[in-house]
Image (cartoon, rainbow, N blue to C red; front, side, top):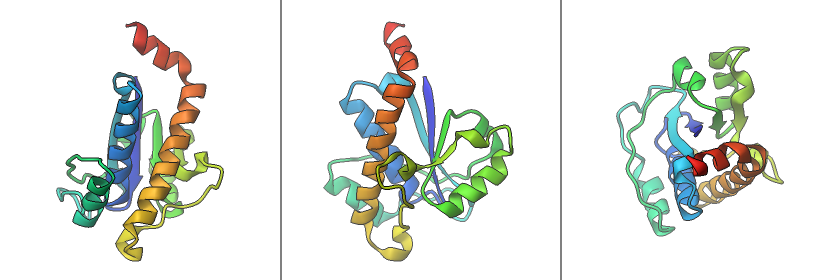
Length: 161
């Protein structure tokens, strides 16, 4: 099983969108049993809150449903995941600092897997949830292709057992 955590600042917009988009992608490809997917925030400022309504509405408009409750990431969460995929450079700096030297190699910006590496703009400030959805979908698709080639042995193992 491949453990993946998506991370943004508050865990109410981008990272839960990424979690639900990625879960939908792997479900459509019959890979759900090969992944454990979750999301977190680097801050506790939204702890316990649901996914932000405009983010949820954007997902629903694209046929993706799901619920979520915000939580802050901890060092143990970093240790227990194979990939920590964050949304922007600020999240990246915070996560590398928290992860420490021994765990920082598993921290990546989500869109670093795409042909156009970039930050996922925060729709909390831009109000552009469609752009965030597009960036996140692009990043998730590119990440999935990376995993399918780089970790194919783990996925095939899960299919055999």
